[in-house]
Length: 475
Image (cartoon, rainbow, N blue to C red; front, side):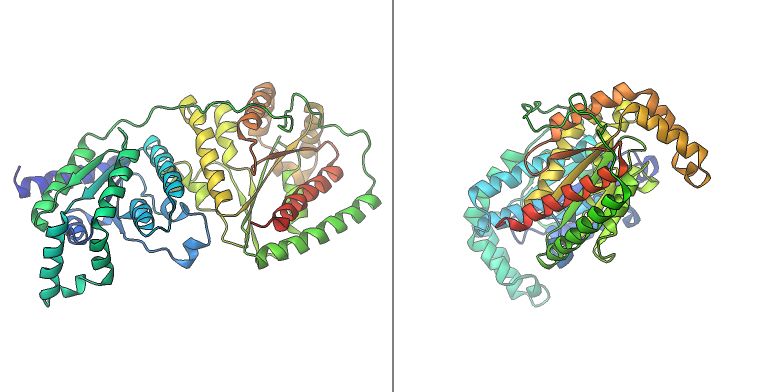
């Protein structure tokens, strides 16, 4: 087709994408230096309705360096109905870091595994991935660099880094081959773009984008990772009791509470000084006391250091983006503390039991959760996961007390009663969650909560122990 026809069809397809809001599209261009990537993207953006596109050419900011690596890309994933264009993106990071030996061979392979997991998660959530590698031969690259340098109008495009990439041409070619081979997938295929004049390259990119818009690849099939062998330390509601033999009196409670909070305050100050990010995830039975426990934790903290995130039904903005986005965007900067009142585990608990997620989605959720948590740990963060448990009779007593107390009635909802009717289904889902996600560095702590005072002290103890273990380590 001629250029005008291509342009009109591409615009029609983009407007249909924006109107239907069923998918997002990511177009990523990476490869050799001085292959017209910037010029092609500028022209393509002029072809498209740029109110529905966003272009990213990233260098890591201090804000991004203070969070796990993938945070910078998760926060830029386009909404459904939009096209995100990345120049180099996550592939450029891996490619050039390996070429410059900032990534060891093993670390490079680890990064490629992370890329595969990231792209599989995006594709499963309705993001169409189009990946283009720009080719150029070494001699042709040198001629092009020389021509650019001798042209006063274009000489600004050539600097030390472009000549450095030319000197690394053979290395980049070899690394690029490995990179493409190891990240090729039906839902995230590579296409190679030979070096031509910008108009010809624009046409090729436009055709590839049109094909992706009109006939997107199938998302990856849902897979469930092998269930890990259950260790003796893995929590289980089936083996544990939420009940306590003796309730704690108020005087002893207040004394121990003050000591635990003073200890937490000191630990939090050291965490801030050493710039260690901390994530505390609270899950538990309805009416188990998550809110009260969170208040006892935050009472020991400087309000400038922490933020509490209450996770409920997703907003319209969150529904327009992949499921993991709402949690990645809330990760704390180095030295800060993020507290989640409910968390990403809703995928394999309430969403699973209530049918809010398909079986394919919640089964896939285990792998996505593992990838998310491992990225936090790899960044040097502390992850504390607390499950607050009460028995069924105690839950009923608390529900009835809330219903009878005017200033507590707002805590009791129809959803709470409905969840109670499916108690056994939730118990089974919780135990499977423990079995699949209780791993080194991301262990669960099961807190018996029939006695609220003992439970709050146990929460403080668990948080303090985990922070002190991290502070005592050499990492």
